[in-house]
Structure formats: C-alpha cells, structure tokens
Image (cartoon, rainbow, N blue to C red; front, side, top):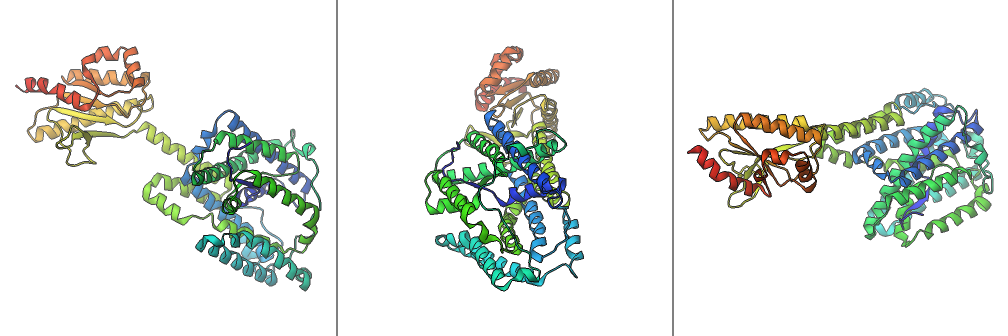
Length: 519
C-alpha cells in the first residue's frame, strides 16, 4: 500500500523498547503477563488508527512539528535510556527497577553490585558487544562488507547459544530465554481493550509510539527515495503503516515500522520493489514454524548486547554540535528532549521538545525580521544594509523590508518596529546633517499574506506618517496581498500611484518630489 520501494518493515529497537518501557509503567509483565500482552495489542491497534487517520485526512504535516533537532535529542535520550535498561540482562541482575529515569536505573544497578551481578553473564555480554561493535566498524569502513554488521547479531546468537548449551552455563546463573512457543500466534482481536481502565493508557501509549514509528518510517523512506531519485507519498506511507499495525494488533503483533538497518541491507543487496518484504515475511514464517526451539538456550546477555550495540548508533553527537553552531533555539529543543527523556520519562522528553519547537515557531511568527535596505553601488538592486555594508541609503527615503506575512499575531509589532526604524534613521540623518525622511517605502515581496489586523495596522501606520508629513509607499506586494489591499480600500487610501512594482521604481518616483521638498 505504500509508495516506498526500499523500506523494510518490522520491529525496530527504538519503538520496541519505547513501547515496552511505557507498558511496564502501567502493568508488571511478570505478575500480570496476560494484561500486559493485551495492553500491547491495544496500543498497537490505536497506533495504527493514529497513523492511518493522519494519512487519510492528509495530516502528515503534523509530523514535521517534531523538528530534526527534537528528534536528535529524543533519539539520543531514548538510546541512553534503552541501553541502561539492558544492564539488567547484561549484568545478570534479577531484581531491577521498573522506572526508566537514569537516577533510578543507576541506583538499581549499583545497589546490586555486591550480590546481584553474575560474572559469567558479564563476560558473555562484554565479549559479544565488542564483537558487534567491531563488525559495525568494519561495515562503516568498507561499504563492500555491508553484510558483516548485518549478519553479526545472528552469528552472535548462534555462537552464544551453542556455548551456553555445551557448558550448561544456565545452571551457573546465566539467564537464558528458555521456551519459545513454536508456530504462528493466534488471533488477538478478542484481547484488545475497547472498554475498561486500560483503554486510555492504550490510546496514550499507542499515539506516542505510533508517532515515533511514523516519523522514523517516513524519514527512512525519504532517505532511500532521495538516493534512488524517486518521490514517496507521505500520506500513502501513513495509511499503509496504519493499516499494517491495525491488522497486526489483531494477529498477535506489536507496533512495526521501517527499519533503517534492514532497509540499508535491502538497498545494498539491490532490492527494486517491496516484494523484498514478502520474502522476509516467508523467512520469518519458516523460522516460527521450525527454528524457534533452537533459541531456548540463548542467553539474555547476548540480546542485551545486540540492543545496546543497536541503540548506540542513535546518539548523534556530531548532529548535536552542528545544531548548536546553526541555531541555539534548536539546540535548546534538542537538549530539552534529551534531558527530559533520561531524567524523567520518554513522554516528558517528547513533550518538552514539542513545546520548545512550538515556542520557536510562535517567536518567529510574532517577531518577524525587518531590515533597512540600501542601494548596491552601480546597480538598481536594494539589499539589507547589515548584510551588505556597501549598500547606501537614499537621503530623505527610508526603505524597510518585512520578512513575513502580516497577521494579527505580529501586525502591531511590524507597525511599532517600523516607527522605531523611522525614529532611529531620523536621528542619524539629523546628526549627519542630511535631509529628514520624507518617504517610507515598505518592500513587500516577502509578505505572502495579510489579514484584517495587518491592514488595520498599515492604516494606523499611514495615519501616523501623515501627521509627520511622510508619504507611505508600498513596493511589490504579491497578488494575494494586492487583492486584499483593494478589497479593504487601503489602496485607494494611500493612492494607486504610491504602489510600485519594484523598490527601484518607487525610489525613482520619489526623486522629483524629494528634490521639490528639499528646494
């Protein structure tokens, strides 16, 4: 149903552990395994509803509110949280905290140091974690060896399982997976919570995990589409992922999404269409039917090592440093998400990132940039005098550019900032013994739209300028703005002769009048 040819679908580390962490905050999987499983299916069902709903109503743009900076911080925080959670299996700890914040987890780890750590488990975990990291390094250094990190996890599972089986390390404290049911899981339609106390938890967990899954899948789809020079339809991807998760929730599956590592293997192996997912499904089916008994002696430490090696790649320090260099507010969103996740919870980290991102948008909307323009020597081009110091101002004329649509949220600011520019330039002209300002030209090409508050603000500005005997002139308003200026009669108020196609035309028209006024 999707438009991506390369994306490989399945469970992924971040979403899996995000889902598991949030589920454990509600239900203890050891004491209440059935309720835990039912809540997982419920969350998956509502994740699918959210994903498909966003695609059906063409609301895919909502994902873009999770800015790149917020995702970098969130992923880094989630990676650390997930890695710390794996210390239970990595160190062989039996009693472990259910909380996810870093303080609680580290307290649980070190309080068990004297009697709860198992040295055999640690040896298995450290050795295979080192092997996995080396394999990943080899794959990065030599693109032709992409298959090395791809098969490393499976190789680790096979070798560690064999070693535990022949040494019977499970009898000496090494925790193993134990029995895994063979065959295909039954229908789970009747296990989804549609009523009761857990419905709201299912909706909340499903919405959060579904949005993260959706963001990851669309980002992966766009990445590989760009590499192969084709376009993907984001809304189609959402409907496909949503339908898949709804169907999955009814067949004993939890949230699945696009996997970057599997998609990369797909891409490097030369896949051309999504049929590769069908082949993958057949392999998984055969595994469930015939191979699951072989995983009985797989140590939990190797699973922890695989997860830790997978999530370490999500900590992108270079991206965080680049965000700091480019935009400090973006960096604030990044760090807000990061520290929110590791010190409080995944939900709070995500909330902090979204709030800061919204705050940045509101700041940019309510405080648009304005600039004084000057003429570039030997041209008829007018540019920002701060960006181009050689640009010269025209005596007696103040040219201002507004770099935003003018709405109710910023109209008063635009008017007040324009009047402040006027006062500042008049003071400078007086100090330099230059002619006083007689014309105020507003360059409106960046103004894509204007509402009634914006027009009212221009009217107030015009009235203020008339009292100072300064003529307001508009240059290059767009078609939407021009139509609204005429509909409101403001174009008649300032006069059609005071609306020009370019700043250069406006300045040329002001020349004779300015000479007359100076005379």
